[in-house]
Image 1 (tube, rainbow, N blue to C red):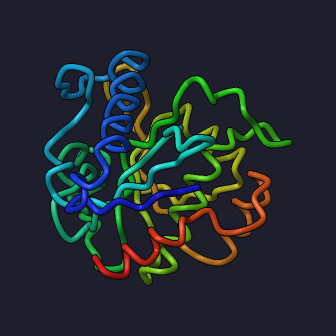
Image 2 (image 1 turned 30 degrees about the horizontal axis):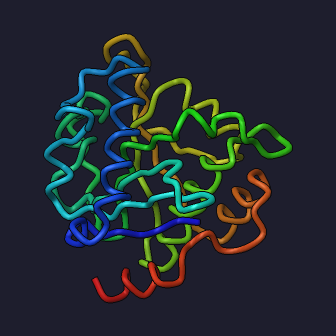
Amino acid sequence: MIRLIPGSHRADFPREIAAMHEIRKRTFHDRLGWQVKTLRSWEIDEFDALNPLYLISTGPNEVVNGSLRLLPTTGPNMLADVFPELLPGGLRIESATIWESSRFSVRQEVAADRSENLLNRTTGELLSGIVEVGLIAGLTEVVSVYDAMFARILKRANCAAELIGKPKRIGDAMGYAALFEISERMLENLRKAAGITESVLEQKSIERLAAA
């Protein structure tokens, strides 16, 4: 299940928010060795202060298994302000119908839980959640920066990406910037790859999103 938490409501969900930041630190700082900002057991950065929408994947007993955040491209975002070298010729992705997905992370303890085509179930749930939120919000696309490992995951998920410019090496990994279609067709592809048959969004979260 995906719980939607607007950044302005962080204080109402201290357990979920703490778990999210801890998983992010274990993923990006401890395991991948990225140069990210940390605060004790958390990975947290300036974009967390911009009222993003968090998608939190929870399992049995509401244990947090993974998360990501969405930000409008009409304001500061990671592609434009952290990885501009991935944009060709000074291009800027900026539209009210395009949001950015970032800080996609999954708890290692559930990494082996996979669908029939070997897609991690939490990953499939989060990807489906992005598209469901996008359809509710009237988005046309989501943009994201990711590495070569995640590019393989997207292929397994049958999640077609429209590359923006050419991949470039960022630190020790190849960095990609791409646009992802928000459509019923994309949602169907992701659900099939993940073995999902119904909405992954918590109903209360949908109501909270509508009121945000």
